[in-house]
Length: 329
Image (tube, rainbow, N blue to C red; front, side, top):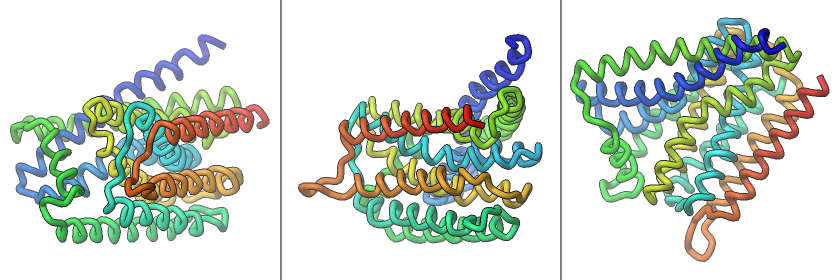
């Protein structure tokens, strides 16, 4: 048993480590390359950084779909959204209070909830079809266009504009050649590491006779959310935890519209019944809970330690649920 699982486990662990490292390299290279091409900082903030944080999920979903494992891709998209809210947001709140900007509360959070509900209604027929993928991509384009236009209207003193600029300023200044090297090299390593993760995860799923979607919801989802978790911990230590809520909302938007679109376009298939009846409703529940937690109380919208305890406890409960589901198969 140990020798049989040794190679898949090594592939999964090494692939995961490389994925976390290469995603940071890719984002730095992409942002710096965009700067050298004189692309608007606003577009870099909304598109490059927003899409970049979901790049691990996109690459994993693409390779899983091409390997005829769409369940892994779907589980990755849904599981990453659950992990981003319950694990990343919850754990960050345990370290430092998270102040919610009014613009995020009024625009981004309701948009995320609406998109999440729309995606759920789209697949209620039990099938993730090619047409569903086209619709998700069109909505993604519409959302990015709206976000760029909406942010253009912001005054430079607006907290959201300041947040975007802060993120850009925190990235290292790379030369043009080094930026291209980081961009291309990061993407190549990202693809190789994702392939290693997918191969290892599929082998482990086959060995334990666990549905691929469960592996996607757990190991792969948590693994691809590690960059967000690392960034959240770093931000909390610098007393900048409020920056993370925007990243989480943006990442979850891209996970639904971009990552979920990948298996729909490359490997349309019927969805696991539990995904429709359990996992997607839980994802919606966490999204709604995040919106409720962000409602101002006594003039302030803050997610504090008690909410962090609740979110992390619910995440542990969800993992226990998945464990019993996998052992019942």
